[in-house]
Length: 273
Image (tube, rainbow, N blue to C red; front, top):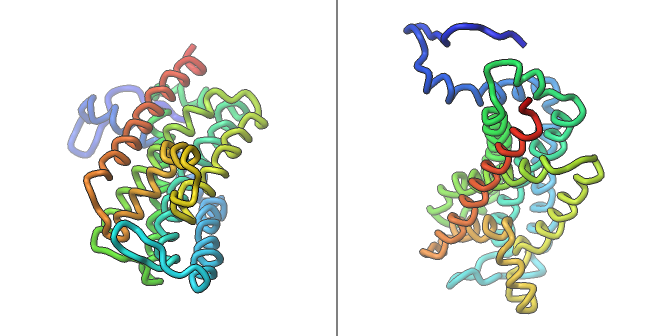
C-alpha cells in the first residue's frame, strides 16, 4: 500500500485537513469494493435468504393464514411478513462483513497492520468498516424493497421512508456486530453471534405478532434490536405511523453510537502499538 507524504491535493489545490480526515474512512470502503469486484457472488448471495423466505412463507402461507391486524388495519399475511424480512435483509447485509470478514482481517490476515502503516488510524478503520457494512446492508434493503414494490407489497406512501429506516437497522447491526467481534478470540466464538441472530430472526415479530407470545417472552422480544427494525419498517410500509416509532429510532441510533464508540476503543487497544 502506497503512502504519499505531504498534504492531500485536489484539482483545486490542497485539500483542507478536516476534509482529508473525513475522506480517510472512505479508503477502507474503497478497498472492500475492490475486493468484492472479484467475489461479487458472495456479495449477491446474502440477499437471497430473505427473498426465498418471502416467496416460500410469505406468499406460500398467505392463502392459509388470511389477514393479520396491524394497528387499525387488516393486511394480507404477505404484506405483514415483507417489512419484517426487509429488516432482516438489512441486518444480514451488515452483520456478515463485521463478523466473519472482520475477524479474518483482524486475527488471520492482519490486514490492519498494513493499513495502520499509512496515515489512517484505528478510528478510520472502525468508521470505514462500519460504513462498508452499512453500504452492503442498504444495497440488500434497496433490492428487497424493489422486489416488494414489484409484488405489490408497498402498502402506504410512508413506505418511502423504509429505505432510510433499513439503513438505520444496518448501521445499528454493523456497529454492534463489529464491537462484539472485537472480543472474539477464535472462529468458534463467532458461533455465539449467529446463535443469537437465529432466534432473533425467528421470534422478533417477523412472521407473527407479539400477541401470540406469553407475556414475559413478549417483553423479552420487545427489547431485541431486530424487533425495533421490524416494528419500524412494518409501521412505515402499512401506514400505521405514530409517535411511538421514535422509540424504535432512538433505540437503533443509541445502539449504533454505542457500537461505534466501543469498536474504536477496542481496535485502538488491539492494534495501536
